[in-house]
Length: 94
Image (cartoon, rainbow, N blue to C red; front, side, top):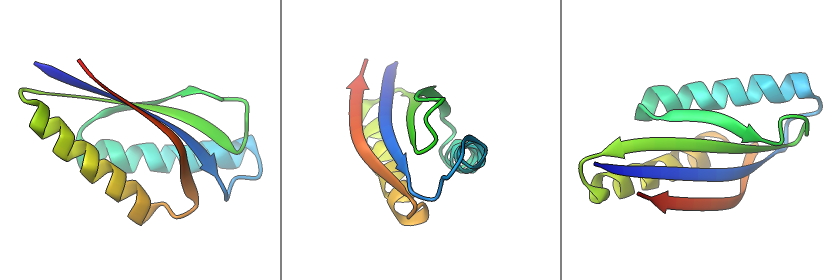
């Protein structure tokens, strides 16, 4: 079994309060969770209204499957969430 751990630091351009941030992230997380069947959660910067760190975890039998899914997730974020900018990425395979 192979595991992908994908951590991304995000800048939320459209967020002007913690309430707006929660709404943006809830939609973001639900779209990614439904489309890619991954575990996803905010793991840092919970009290900062324009920043977030998201952790995404996925398992598969082969690393190739995880690499393909990672590329699709990155493209999906870029194409569907123009107000969310990826500031930093950390990718780990176990």
